[in-house]
Length: 610
Image (cartoon, rainbow, N blue to C red):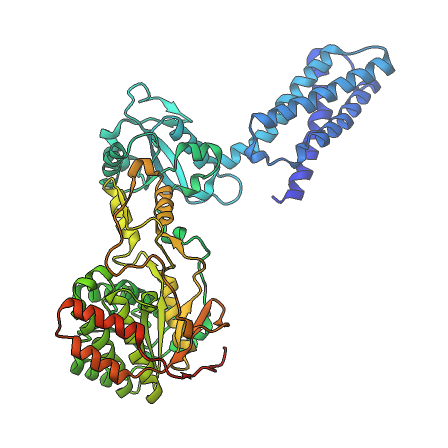
C-alpha cells in the first residue's frame, strides 16, 4: 500500500471509529432509549471535525505506524482527549448540558479502536505480513543482557539485516528457561552446539561487548566450532547512541577499509578486448592472478591458460573456474616457472594468445631484502623471459603487473620491479606487441598484505603490530586491481604505465583502528604496538616519477605515465655483473640502477587521450 492510500485508509477508519463510537456508547449506557437523535448527530459531527483538526496538528497522518511505539500512543491520547473536550464545550454552549457518561465511554472506545488500528500495522510488519516476507536467517543471540535485548529488538524491527532472532544463550542461571523479548533463553554456552542443531541456527551473534578479549575469544571459538556463521556486535555504547546499527553486525568486508567508494571501470571496452580470445595469465594461482582469471571469465574469452609454479594454487583456481564457467570457456593449466626460458617460449608459441597478463612475481619486501638474488632471477629475468616469449609468439598485448614501490625505490623488490618496467618499455619500441605496465598500490586482502596479518593478530588476542605511526599507503581492493589490469589491456597503445586514482593515501594505523571497530573491538581490547621500520620500507609511496607525470587522466580514475627511453642493454649488463655478488652488493646495485638509470628524450609522449 502506497503513502497516499495509507492516508485515505487512516482518514476513513478514524472517521468511522469517531462517528460510531458515540452511538456505541449511547446504546451501551441507555439500551432502551432512542439513539438516532439530533443532539447525538451534532456530537458525532463535532467529534469528527475536532478529531481531524487535532490529528492534523499532531501530524497523526504523517507517522509510520508500522514502527509505532509509546510516543505514538501519547499522540493518539492527546488528539482524542482534546476532541472530546471540544465536544463537551459545544454541548455546554448549545445544549446547556454535558453528557459526561456518554463522552467518557466514547473517549475510551476511541482510544482503544484508534490505537488498535494503528498498532496493527506494527504487528503485521513485525510478523512479515506487510508485503513479501523476506527470507531471514535463524539467529541465536549469545548474551541475554542489555546488549543482547537491544540487538534482538533492532533485528526484529530492521529486516534489512537479513537475520531473525529465535533464541538467547546465556550462562546466567536466573535467565535460563525464561522468555525475553518473547524469545526463550534456551541454556548456557555448554548447550550451544545442541541448540544450534535443534533450532536450525544459521547465524550466531555474540552480544556481550563488555567482556574482555580473552573471554570473548573463548566464547567465539565455541561458536565457530558449530559451523554457524559467527559475528560480533560493535561496542554497546555505539549501538545505543546510534553510531552504528545492527546492519554492521556482520563479517568485516575488505571494501569497508578503503575509506572511499569502490572504483568501477569500463566493462564494454574490456569485453571487446577479450571476448572469444585466447588469454594467458602468469601467476594465475596468486591473489591477483586468480582474481584476474575470475574477472576475465565474466567477459567470455574462448580460452584462459592458467600458468603458475605452484600446482596446488593452480589446481584450486582451475576447479573454481571450471565449476562456474566450464561450459562456456576452456581452461588449460600449465605448471611452469617463468625462469624456465625454453618452456615459456614453447608455451607462448603453442597457444599464441591475444594477450598476456603477467602477474607472476616475488612481491614481499622483507623477503626480497634477504634474498635479492631471487628478486633478480624471478622479477627481472623471469619478466624478460615472458615478455620476449610474447614478442616471439606474436602476442597483441602484454600487461605487466608492477608496484608503486617501483617509484624512487628504496627496496630490492621495488628496484626489481622498476627494472622489469624498463625491460617491457624497451621491448615496446621494437616489437609489434604492445607492452604496458600497471602500477598497484597495496592490495587489500592479498596474500601477505596487512589485512590478513591484522585479522590473525586480532583472532589471537593481539597486539596489532605496525612499523611506524606515520606510515601510509595507497590501497585498492583485489577486484579493483584486477579490473585495472584488464582495462589497461583494452586501452594499451604501447609503452605506457597505467596507475589507478586511489584517492588519498591511508595511514596504516587508521586502517588497523577501522578493522578493530568493524570487528566490534577497541584498542583497549587488542592494543597496537609500533615495531620500527624494516629494511627497504618507506613511510610514503608514490605512483609516478616526476618525469613520468601527465596532467590529464587517460580514462576516468586512470592516469598514464609517460614512456621514457632507458639504455636497457647497459642496465642488464649491470644486473649481470652484480648477480653473483653478496647480498649488500646486489642490493646497492639494483637501487642504483632503478634510481639513476639515464633518462633520454620522451617517447610516445603524445599518446592520445582515450
